[in-house]
Length: 385
Image 1 (cartoon, rainbow, N blue to C red):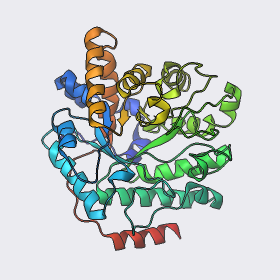
Image 2 (spheres, rainbow, N blue to C red):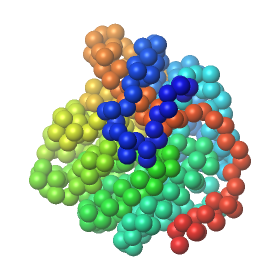
Image 3 (tube, helix red, strand yellow):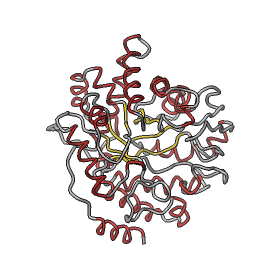
């Protein structure tokens, strides 16, 4: 975005002023100029079908002005192919005043979206076992350099889940430890390495995915702990993350009866608004986990879930596919404004957070050149030795 004001980078902001003290006049002016359609588009992060830029993604960017895109494993081709995909998305959005979130899940270990031949981070558990926060920070720095090279600006990492259930099929070594203090120290060091080098970090999966025995990609897990147990383990890293004013938190698709006996956390006003925002004091951006996961689609349509997640307090709705669901969710949100189910003021509240985050990191749809795989692999060895 273009503006004469100089907005501090994240590392500068930590030393200069908290989020609440940032200049807001530019954001207010931009929000005032946006149509309802544009505002709703900014609430959506979309995935795509294949490994190349296509007409559906082009329409989502040019016509619906979606807030960003996510590259998943099915979209990964070659280093050149990923760069080209992201560059084409930027070209499509270049004439629009609001840049895209260009996002990915790059945790390291078994959750990596790197092409073959590129060195990825070890699993989080390997980093946590070293109990070396300086190494964890360097891991975050490497992630930032790596993602910038492709043209990304947002990473759904690190994982703040505590690996408290050995039978957990989805977290396991994605967690830094079974000790919440080790998770906190190492995950937030990785996160700081990224944000100090200009990559937005969305930490996950609130309120905690570490004590499940069901994969939420397939069905809805239940964590039947009381609030004291959650505070003692699952919530420890998230409370510290909130104290450090993290920019984004991803919400898990899990039922926590202690917080809401009816709704999964990602669709729960009690979890997102009442607990995360009001009780824990979180003021940043809230992102849903992918709304096409089985934990959601076994009981809801994607548009229904998107509307409920937004009403619950989420700002960004992550919809990996398909195109029909992405468009229908946008239309459902718009209809909800017209019927009075949600107010345009509520839309503005989330869009303002989104614009502030994009502006804070000076996001821009700048084209990047070809990636130097050998140089990045060499840098990885030096950073992670």
